[in-house]
Amino acid sequence: MPLVLRIALIVAVMAAIFAVDTTTRYEVAAAVFYAVVILTTARLLGRRALVALCAACVVLTVASLVFTPHGDLRSGLINMGISVAAIVMTTWLVLKMETARAAAHEAQAQLLRIARIKSLEGLTTSIAHEVNQPLAAIVTSGNACQRWLAQEPPNLERARQALERILADAGRASGIIARVRSLTRGEPPQRSAFDFNDAVQEVLALSQAGMEINHIALTVELADGLPPALADRVQVQQVVGNLLLNAIEALGPVPAAARRLRVESARDGEAILFTVTDSGVGIVPGMSEHLFDAFWTTKDEGIGVGLSISRAIIEANGGRIWAEPLVQDGAVFHFRLPAAGAEPRP
Image (cartoon, rainbow, N blue to C red; front, side, top):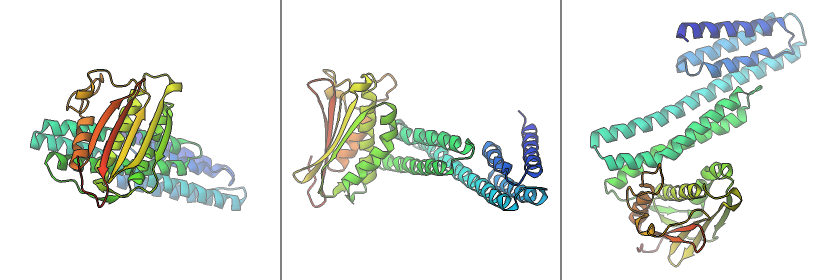
């Protein structure tokens, strides 16, 4: 549909809402539908135009109250306040959501610029692999936010939560790009002491939706009293997220009732040991020696860099990562990191 016709349709809808809101009683809050107009026009208008549309909707809402001929005025004032709040909140959420989307697009654009300028195909592949998860999460949360706002009445609290997830994932994508670039340049990690269990819990929270959708029974056993880990927190979280994602994918062919995933942390002398155990398809004979090789994969759509990057990150932080097959179906992945105050060892 041409842009002119779309704008004409928007004006017609707003006029219809104004007419209905003015001719009905004060108790009928038809003005709340202006929020739906703002939501549906978000992709057509820029930031200033969207703010102007919000202001116009507020003015029309107040004007409707003035020209409404009958009803309980007190109820009309309350409904007007609710409608204005819904219009303003919807506009604010849409603007924030567009900002988050712009950040995601900027992250993708930065990836392309790096590829063109540096001509580092390996780096491009690595970043594409690592940012895929947060970008996919941004899209999922954005769609959820639109659904919450499109409800009658809009569920603003759920929409706000979805927006917070979008902003967090956009920040993760940007941080991953910076970390992978520094890793490929040979720069040392930004090592500092941090609470290892807290870092793991943050990644588990981001992976919770995927586990619920796939009906995976999760067991978490994080040891109390662990010393602080001495490593780059963001890089370590990348590895934890990668291992969880691999485990979830390995559980795909398994019947839903048998999908089990265990996450553990423990003290290992002067180091911290992290373990992910799944009941998936396991490690076939001859695969173990290639698991951490770059561009080697058994997945139809895999590119074979996830575990390679994970090994590079863990070793750069003074640790070690390895895998073990289970006697029955399933696999175990471990990595160990030095604790604060301990000398790193392989």
